[in-house]
Length: 271
Image 1 (spheres, rainbow, N blue to C red):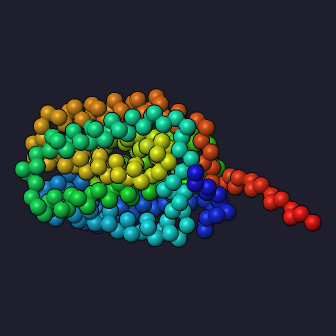
Image 2 (image 1 turned 180 degrees about the horizontal axis):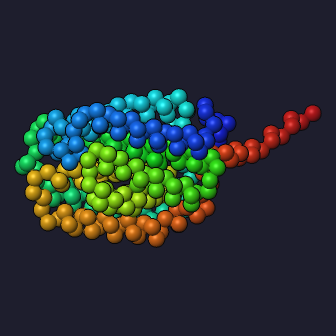
């Protein structure tokens, strides 16, 4: 069990701090991607577009988030829960998402990849760290300072989903982005379940990075029919996740303003 209280952290968690980090991350990423001058739909055209259109913003954001988390002293509560959820069986939801990601990778037209393009696309794995440390890490720490775990799940998943609307400013179609936002809420729920059932954000980072990489990779060249199976499996997992997330919320004691557990007083030495 990991014990985390506000008094043990360098900066006391507050909801506004978590929200400020969420907003700041979006603005930094958006500014860098807009400055590249590369439209969202052109990222996959070549290795240069991919690196400067998406990869550069992730590298800079990673550095800034490491500095921010260190200054706040929030690494432990951001990465680890006090206790894993009482119900562990909902972990099957993120496992199904992992299977969907592997199906995506199986559907990829790897012959369309050049060495340079593959190297640039590997940088996209950083999204697993950046988006998870923001949305289910630092934001969750801030939300837990005042809110119950049900609200923590809902708001962190909703804000994670809504952050994808910045793609519209980069030239992505509104309808496609709206569907992406809805899908992201389902995915965010699966990643939250993975955090609660394992007690660690690290596995959610790994799965998130794998999923996003697989989604991008399958968009290159001519993917096989497994792509459709993977998409359906992902949506099914997300809907089931909504049905079972309450089981990993129930009984949670993750409030960062909670008092530390009492320590039994030492017996007085005999006279």
